[in-house]
Structure formats: C-alpha cells, structure tokens
Image (cartoon, one colour):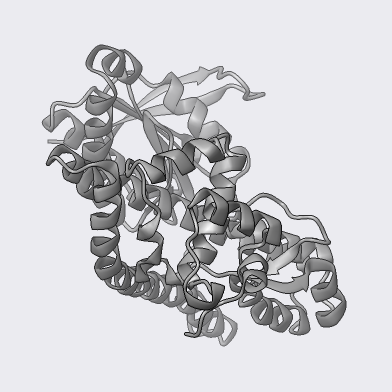
Length: 401
C-alpha cells in the first residue's frame, strides 16, 4: 500500500488533522519519506485518542514512548488489519441513501460494541458491511424491531465470546511474557506476533463452531416443519407437552468464594459449567444463562429436565462442590434474544430458591407432562412462594434404586 497523507490518516482514524500533527509533535507518530503514514499510524491515532478519552494523559503516553517504557509499534501487526477505518458517510446520509431507518442503523454501532452514535457521526467501514443484510431483511418484510433484536443478540453473544477470549489471551500469553522478564514494550511487540499467527486460526475455529451450532438449530427447526407437514396430512400425531425451565443453584457459593477468593470461585464455576453442560445436552436440553452461583436451563421435554437435574445434583456432590438444588416448572415461555421469559421462568426460579441443598423440586405441571420411569415422587405443599400469587403443589424427586 502506498503511503497515506495526513488527511487520509485523519479521515480513516476519525480524528482531526490537527490531532495527527499533535501526535507527530509528541513522537507517537513518525511519518516516513514524503511525510506519508502507514495503516498502523491510522490505528495509533484512533487508539491513542481512545486512551486519552478514557483518562490516560497524552503527554504521559508520549513520555513513556520516548523513554522506551511504552511502544505502539505492535499496532503494525497483521492481527490488527481486521479493524476497520471510518468511512466518509454519516449515519444520516446512509439512511437517506438506503432507506434503512436511522434508528436501526444506529443499533449497528451498538452491536459492534461501541456507544450509540449521533446521526452526523461517520459510519465505520465494518459497519457498512452489515447494511446489505439489513436491506435484504427489510425488503423481505421482516420488521425493523425484529432485526434490531437479532443485531443485539449478535452483539451480546459475540461480546461475551470476545471478553472471554481477551481475558484468556492476557492470562495465557501476555502475563507469562511479563513474568518471563520482558518489559511492557517488549511484551506488546512479542504478543502482537503471537496474535497475528493465532487470530486467523481462532477465526476459523469460531466460524466452524458457528456453522455447527447453525446445523443443530436448523435441523431442530426442520424437525418441527416435518412434523407439522405430517400432522396436517393426517400421517402423524405429535405428543403435545409444554417445555420446562429449570434453575440450579449452589448453596453456600457466596460464603465459599468469600473464604477462598476469586480464583477459587472461577475454578468452581468452570467445574460446574463442565458438569451441567454435559448433563443438560445429554438429555436434549440447553443452558440458557449463567447466574454466578447457578444456571438456567431449557428442556423441550420436562421428563428430560428432571433426569438431567438428578444427574447434575449427583455430579455436583461427586466433585466435592457445594450442594446443588434445582427447581423445575413446565409451561409456556417467550423466547427473545437468546433468552426465555415469562411466568414459567419466574416460578422455576422461585422453586429453586425454596429447595433444600441436594433437592430437586418440580411442579405438578412437570409430572403431568413427563414420563418419569425410575423416579420417586414425594408431595410437598401447597407451598407459598415469594412473587407467586397462588400456592403451588410441589413434589420432591429422587432416583429409585
């Protein structure tokens, strides 16, 4: 690539030309022959400005660069080529040109992980890449609010992935380099080389997992389509049962983490995640969200949810974790942005709070919808639960010998 002018750096970085001059004056940017700049200088200008806005003093950064205590040369690494520059088009102009509602375009910036922009702000080049998909969805009759929910789900899910990935990279790559005797500047340069080699392979792995998850979800949806077609043709009668939601809590989790510290809490959470994820998927369920000291699950078949809960409680006990307790309720749920909502969810959470350590409690709705071979039931109730208007008849579930 030929050298970039000062104006081009300012345009792509989204800063004023005077700011580029200031960075040159401080020695943070060093123009080449003919006063030209590199793509790495674009990233340096944008990132340094973001550091400054976060409260890091510009003069302090410049002094650290001059002293060799800090270096931004790592931003020349190919790993950073994926980060787009700023286009010349504003959000308002893009909305007028494409017909995509302005409010929906502003959500694209949020999905990419940044604060909501103003209509006169310029669109990033990577944000432009999302617009054709939005245009196609709108032309296919999909409502803007539905597209917005999907964008937010993308952003939220990928944010969690990237935050986990970044923490992992810091503890497993950057910290060991520092502990090995490198200075901060040396570490940043060395880790950039590692990241440049690793990033394409991580993207490849991420995309393969995404496609696998798509195949799983699409095949489940296709099963419903086939069942519907056969049912309409009178060739199949589907067993109608409501789904179940369950909550698993670890009793004494807060006290344990206070006594043993954050590292022990992280290890406990990892062990718990491995146990419950395997048990839920073995019984055709899925973890919905992690709640610090517990997990929420969704099961299309309530009976599978009961068996999974028994496995989880037994597995937790076998791994010397704090005792688990589970509450399960069956009924209609609302699915939105990767989460489930509604009365069924609220009741299941309240039941888990009521359960004793090592206990699995279910409602009569779960029993009515499930085939529970090899399971014993003990009636409890009626029980009044906080936030639930009517007393509930609960049953304690145990595995028969």
